[in-house]
Amino acid sequence: MLMEKDNSFTKKGNFMTKFIKMFNFLICVFLCLLIISCKSGYNLKQDQTIIKPDASDLKQWKNAKAFEPSGSDIETAETLLKKGFDEQARGTVNRVLGKKPEDYYQQFVGFIDESGDKIIWINCFCKNEISSFPDWKNKIVYVADGGNCFVNIKVNISKNSVVEFNVNGVA
Image (tube, rainbow, N blue to C red; front, top):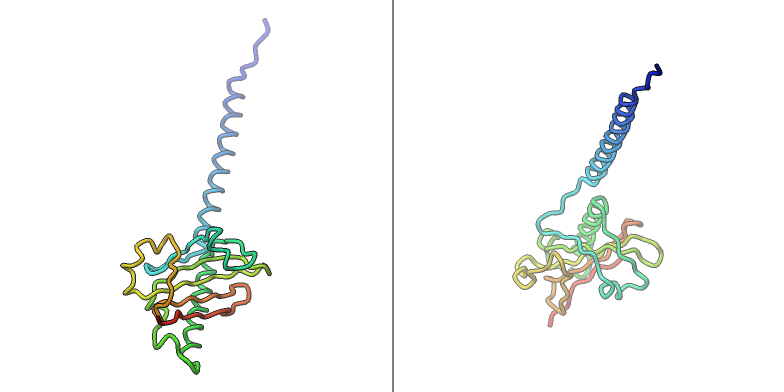
C-alpha cells in the first residue's frame, strides 16, 4: 500500500509563511508612513493656511508650477516673513507701520518658478478683516487697496531670501 503524502501541513506552512511576510511588510509600510509624517513636525497655527493655487492663480508668475510646502518650507517661510517685516521697520519708509506677522492671517501659496526654485507667496491680511473672508482657508484673498492691512511677501525657499515685500495702497 502506498502512503499518500499529507500536503495539508505543507500548505498550512506556506500560508503561514506568506501571512508572516505580508504582516511584516505592512508593519514596515506603517512605520515608514509614521516616520515621514513625524518628520515634518510642523503644525500650522490657527491663523495660517496652505492653499494649493489653481491655474488662474499661477498666471501671475511666469511658467510657475504649484507645489505643496512641507513643514520645513513653512518654517523657513515664517523666518523670512519675520525678516521682511524687520527690514520694513528699519527702512526709510516703514509701510507696515509697526505691525508684525502675528497681527495677520497668513496664506501660504507654494510654486516652483521657471528657474526651478521653490517660492512661497505669503498673503497676509489683518485679523480684524476676517469677517470679510469666510473662506480664507480655501481661497486666496485678493483685494485692491486696504493699506497695511493687506501685505504679501514672496520668499525664495531654495535661496533662503525675501524676493518681494508688498503693502497695498490706500484708496
